[in-house]
Image 1 (tube, rainbow, N blue to C red):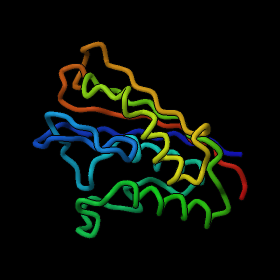
Image 2: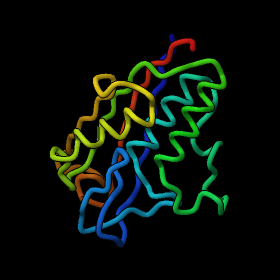
Image 3: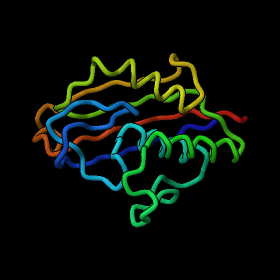
Image 4: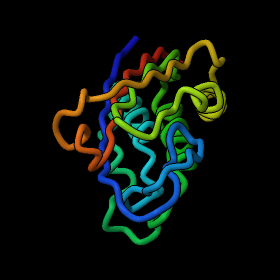
Length: 157
C-alpha cells in the first residue's frame, strides 16, 4: 500500500459559484483558475499521483497548455485515476478537508462524496469530505480564497 497527500488553493474572483468535490456550489464569487478550479478534486488528484509516484497535477495538466483551459476537474480526476491504474495501483480511500470561511458546504457534502466515489470507482463509504474555517486568519480568513487538503490510500491493482 501507498499513501499520498495533496493540497490546492485558489483565490476568489468573479463568478456566482465554485466547483467543490465535483459539485456546483452557489457562492457570490468564483475562483481564478486555469480549469474550473475545484480545489478538492485537485488536491485528491495530487494525493493519488503522489502515492503512485507519478508526479503532480501540474505535470499532467500544465496551466500554460490551452487544452486544459476551463477543464472540468472531474474529467481531470478521471484521467488521473486511469493513469494510476495504468501504473498498477488502485485507490482504496480518500480523505479531504476544505478550508474556507465561505461558502458553507454542509448541505453539499453528500453530493460531493457521491460524485467523487463515482470518479474514483469507490464506495461512498471510502470517500470522506470535511470542511473547516481558518478562524478568520490569513488569506482564507479574509475570504480572499479557499484551499483543500487530501490524503489517498492506494493498493496494488
